Image 1 (tube, rainbow, N blue to C red):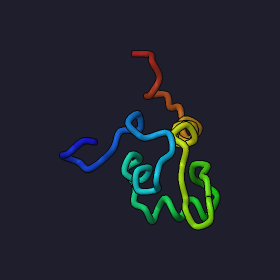
Image 2: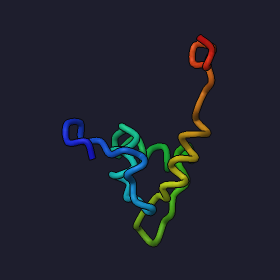
Image 3: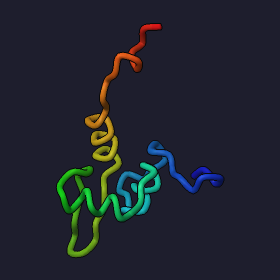
Length: 77
């Protein structure tokens, strides 16, 4: 965890994550993550009774699927 920003690196997430860990790693609020979950727009999640958990691999896949290529973001200089 980066002590200055309060954020967690995606690579430092455990295999099974709590919502606050995912929100911190993504730099979003818990409310935003919950809204995405309820709308079906966020990363895949697990639900056991009332407990919500995320797999790190699903969070990474969500971020990769959300990537948008731009002309300025290409490797050409």
